[in-house]
Image (cartoon, rainbow, N blue to C red; front, side, top):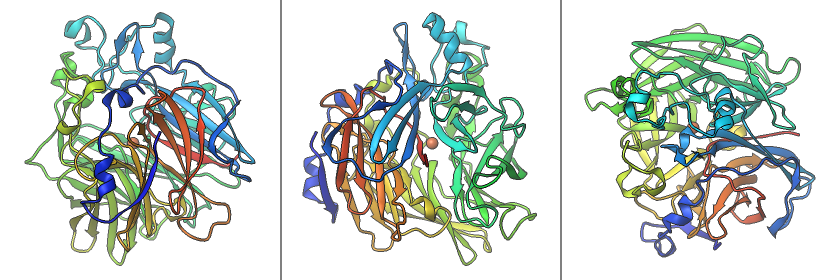
Length: 502
Ligand SMILES: [Fe+2]
C-alpha cells in the first residue's frame, strides 16, 4: 500500500491527479462475508509503533453478511450487522468481533438463505410474485454502535436497538432502554454525544421518527455519565406534515436540527414485490426541502414550538456539525445533487461511480428570525463521514476530518482522509490510494488535549493489495501515519463507529 501526505493548494494539484485511478476489483474485493468471530485477539503492529498510554475501545458497525447460498444482497446496506471492537490497553490493541444475533440473522443463518426482503432492494428468491405483499422486514442492526449507560447498542434506524455485552459483544437482545421505547420502536442510528450541556457532563441526544401522512419526531436526551447513566432526562414529540425520511440530525446548545429532503415515497413497487422500500424514494423537484428546528428542552427555548424553514435543494444523509451565531444556525452537511439509489438491475459490486452523484461539503446558514436559509459550498471534492472534535460538537469548530476521494473532482471510492480548516480553508490529506480504501475516520482527542486538533484518527481500511483489513491510526493534527495493524479478519466497507472509555 502506498500512502501519501500532501497539501491541497488548488484544483490542478499534481499529486492528486497522479493517484486518481483505482482498480474496481481492489475496491469490490472488500464485499464478502466476515468468516469468523474472534475474542480478544491481540493485534500485531505492521508499521509504526503502539501508542503508549492509549486506553479505550473503538467500536464499529457495518454489514458482515452479504451473501447467502449464492445469493447476494442487492445493496450492502441490507447486510446483517457485525460489530468489531478494538480495545486498547496501554497502547496494545485487542480485537473482538460478533455478528448481531438478531431474530432474522438467526433464522437465515440456520438455513443459509435470505428469507426477508431488504429495505435497499434485496429480494427473496422466486421473483416479484414471491415478494409481493410481504411487507415485513428484518432489523439488521448494521448502522452504528454506541454505549448508553451500561449497554452497548447496535443501531438500525427503522426499529429498536439491540443490546450487546460490552466486553464479549454477545447479543443480549432487543432492548426498550428500561421501558423508554415501545417494543421495536424506531430509534435513530445517529445519536449525538453532547459534552457541553448544563443538564449532564455527557448527554446522548437522539430521536425516533414515526412516518406517515404526518410524521412525528421523538427527541430524547439521556444522561450518559455519573449516577444513573442511561436515564432518560428529556422526551419531546413534534409532529410535521408529510412523509419524513430522516437519517441524521445535528444539535447546537439550544436546538435540534433536521433536514427533510424534498423526496416522495411511492410504496407501490415495494408492495408489488418489485423494489425495496428505499428504492421507492424519489426526489420531487416540485417540492421544497424543509428544516425542522426543534428547541432542546435542555436549552434556553424549552417549551417553545418548533420552527419550519425552507431548506436548500439537494439530498443529505449526514450532517457534520452545527453551531449558533447570533440568531442564526450554521450547519455543515454532505450534500448530493440527488438521492443515490442502486437500481433493481444494477450490481452494487460493479457500479459505475460516474453515474452516481458525489457528496460535497456545504454550509447552510439558517436565519431563525427571517426564517430563511442560504447554502455555500465549502469543498467540491467528493467526501463522506465527516466529523469534528467530539468536544466541539454543537459548538463552533475550526477543524473537520472526513473520508474523501483521492481525486479532486467527480465521484469515486473513498480513498483519502482529509482535514479542513474552516477558517483558513486550508486542506491537508492522507491517501491510501491507489489500492487502499478508507472508512469513517473516528476522531479521538488526546487525554488532556488543549488544542482542537490534538488527537488521533482511527480508520478501518480495506487494503486492496493484500485483500484484507487494516486499522490505521493517524495524528489528527498533521495526518501523519502513527500505527498500522493488519487485522486477522476481513471487514467489508462499513458504516459508523464510536470510541468509548475502558
Ligand atoms: Fe449514517
